[in-house]
Amino acid sequence: MIDTHIFVGSLNPSLNATPERILSEMQKCGLTYGILTHFTGHFYNFVEGNHYLRQMLETSDKLFGYLSANPHYVQHSIADMRKHLTSEKFLALHFCPTYWNMDWEEEPVKEILNAYRRFAKPLICSFSLPQFPVAEKLAKEFASMQFLLLNVKSEEWEEALKLAKNCPNIYLEVSPYLLPQDIKKACEYLGSHRLIMGSDYPYFPFSTILHLVESSGVSEREIVQITRENAIKFFGIEERI
Image 1 (cartoon, helix red, strand yellow):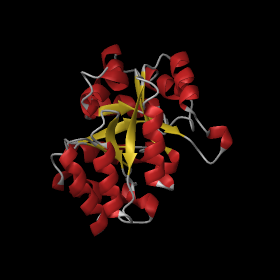
Image 2 (cartoon, rainbow, N blue to C red):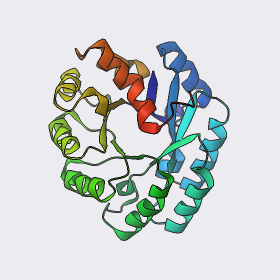
Image 3 (cartoon, helix red, strand yellow):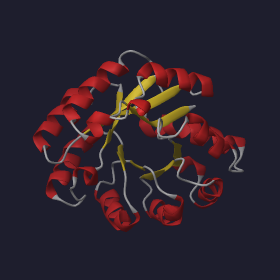
Image 4 (cartoon, rainbow, N blue to C red):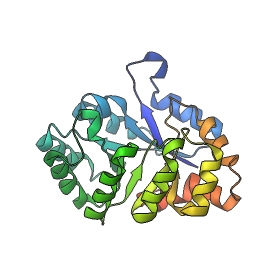
């Protein structure tokens, strides 16, 4: 199984998940691979966070990562993409400009996205319900790029399914913010091949997301797709694991 949404590092010592702790907890729950975002890189200093994350990823063949970018520093972000995204350890860009107080449709954001698409890797991002029309617009403007929407809440799920139905390059994360019946509905309406599991660890234990998927009433085949196969195809890592 593959967990595609793990944070490493934190300002809160109780949530400071080191690679060693992550690997230990993954082993306990039967997770084979994990994809990490560095807390510092995503929320504070993207250059520093990307640097530290790359060092961490080199310590284990079980760990991959997401690069971070800051729309307030376009050229520095592009330079960091050129520096790190050629590494097979970095599978995508985890880019949420609203965390940096910038709208998705502002020019610096578009400049980073335009620079990023040349790497032919997916975009990992978050949109609130009022931003779904923007997500649809971006998905169609960047039609060659695949998008994974993170942290969709249960109360937003129905609209997120409609969004993904209209945009075949949008995939949805199955996260702890959903209910088991949400997963069942998504498999029936959208198809299990468009769902990818992510725990948001260490904010939630790995066991939470695993129990959620397994208790959703979907078939064993669909569980395998959600917890492993879809991530392998989405991130293009068939030959790396």
